[in-house]
Length: 397
Image (cartoon, rainbow, N blue to C red):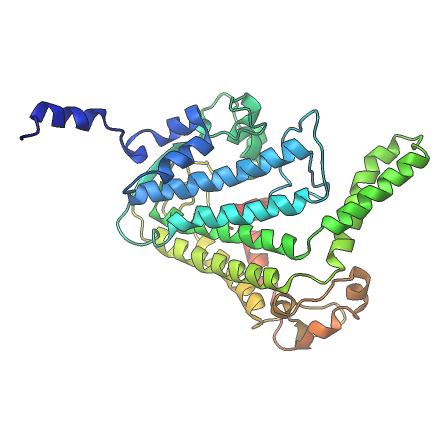
């Protein structure tokens, strides 16, 4: 029996289009990251653009999950130094924090980063593709209620991190940038997943649950005795508690397997970063770029000096040499020709007692003779970027 031509044509028009053939950006705006990720993952024969989109949406969904956990628990980082929990967002009125929440957040983040990286394999080479995203369409469902509010817009939550001081000088009525991601950006995104998964493994290697439990018990015990009379306590206590937790957390035997995994991820980050710069260097277009080469401009409005690639790769090479033990970290009580072997702190870790490290007793097992890393490459990067060095290092990863 012949299949009627009219039915065949109807099936073409009525069948769902692959997500990349639709407006992915609008789909995220309407349905959110979780639903869009599920739709992309369900594609039977995803294109390379679909695979990149899935990796990108999963990456953003991982960030959304950390926002939701922090909203639900009230988790915060008074030091402003811990990745994934240093960004500001709202807190639920009935937020309830438990000491195990930090480890749970970073365990989930490590899993999510691996899932985001999986579809990106081998995308940095081969035929070109593109995925266009309007940043105004992106949002994080911080309170997990399925409804978008203005304070959940990606640009409101991440704008200062993406644009630095320019965020505060921008025209608030101007439209948010439109980015056309391409194959080179797959290596950049993969590098970022390695960076954050490595950071998650460091946190999990020095699991803070016990220190947080003891800090909470001390606070509760003191509160039961008497409440402080001066409001200054409320200003300084969280920071002091956080500092104590960090010092206690470091001064315990870490999980060596976690630290070895972290080191491997940081080394993979360097490798993927090199792959990105090799790929982006071959581009001849200049169309809504994310991270440009010397002949392109970024859709974010940020301009990179022509020597950015070589200078940044030199900084990464220094980091790689430290992670491999080929160079040593200078130590204040040593002169030239000796320093700390950072690589062995990952592969043969011990508790870190800050006072012992300052005096030298704690550092002694990791001190050895060899070439120390110079600050020259980082100094050149700082000089090249002016006051934007830290912002640019976050962007370049």
